[in-house]
Image (cartoon, rainbow, N blue to C red; front, side, top):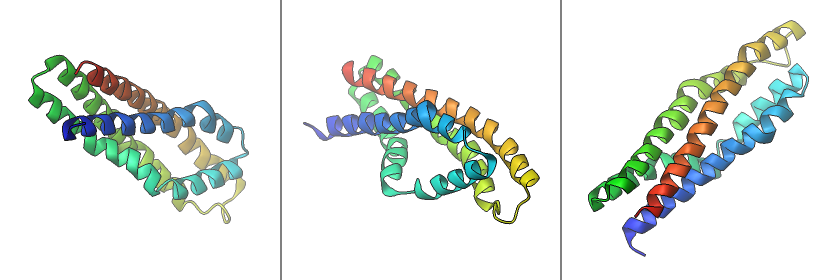
Length: 162
């Protein structure tokens, strides 16, 4: 296997792992957390936000961000325009729809919840924080899930069209 193929396959695998993570959140975690009372909901989110920043997460999340554009350039250099356009679509979907939405939307909301002092907040303040956070975060989560899945599909098609 050439270095070119290795990079393209790695980009597809990492994009698939990222899509799987976001898909899992949409399928189960969002609804499971949504069933919790306000204080438990915010506490669970604080805990998850703190533990998700780990090497496994960064490998797929940042690895896709790095390797998809590299794979796009490599595909462009081969002259296979069909494969190139699918890989380009994968890179754009991931950069804008996954990374951009995460950094521009989900992370600021995560930071807001992380700084919230649940232990010293009133029940009304806890309810208000959840109302300010939950619907917005979930809407952004759906966007990045769809973008991640579409990016993965486009990357797979690009690899097939090689």
